[in-house]
Length: 99
Figure (spheres, rainbow, N blue to C red):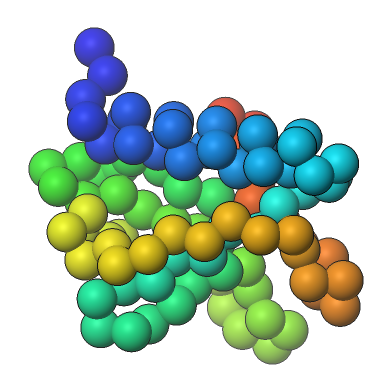
């Protein structure tokens, strides 16, 4: 049985896909802003580890190491879905297809 975090991740993933489709985009960008003001350009998100936390994998900036951030759901201040920046050409990958 899916819990609230699974449902949250599924709904955000669905909203990103709908946004891309509505605007004729191949992909859309997903950004998450936390209560402390930090912002992340999200590649994927999953409901793990649970217990009030979910995980995001950020897009790598050239020269940076891969990074997964575990976030308490209550720390999310804003979620932004937009067209990808043409300079970056990165977008959100639904967790079902993320590797």
